Length: 75
Image (cartoon, rainbow, N blue to C red; front, side):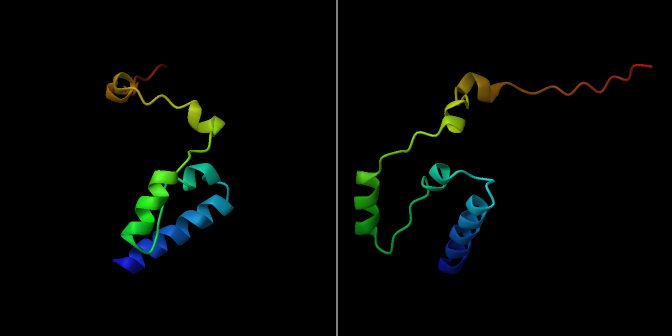
């Protein structure tokens, strides 16, 4: 299981390098060697303001909207 997590972290770092993910978004996932270190990291976490993330709408109303695909054919 540890190897899978390390592989995931490496993948995310690569995705940031390729600019598919912002560095501030990558910082949301925190990893440490011990539970005590993790608690300290979580308590001291300060989110970085990312202008691309601030444009997202996370409201429940928006999430529940079902997208409708128009498959009508006009000739």
